[in-house]
Length: 111
Image (cartoon, rainbow, N blue to C red; front, side, top):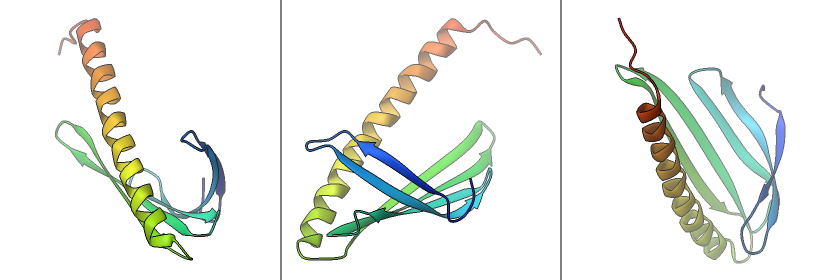
C-alpha cells in the first residue's frame, strides 16, 4: 500500500454503507493514515494507526475523528464516532479472547 491508494469497505451497520477511503500516510511498521472520500457528505472520517515496539511486543494506537462536511454533519459525525467506538471496544474484546485462547493452546516455548 502507498499514499494515494484507495480502499472500498462495506460497513455492515443499519443501514449498510459502502465507504471509500484514501491512504494519506504509509510508513510500514510505524504509521498509516486514511481519510474517507466517499461518501464525502455529511461527514468524513480520518484515521491514524501508529505502531511502537515495546517490551511485550507491539503497541498499536488507533485514532479516528469524524469531521462534519455538510448539513447534518455534526449529528452524523457524533453518531459515527459512537458506533466506531463501540466497534473498537468489541474488536479489542475479540482479539483478547483469541490471544488468550491461543496462549492456552500453544505449548510453552523453551529458551
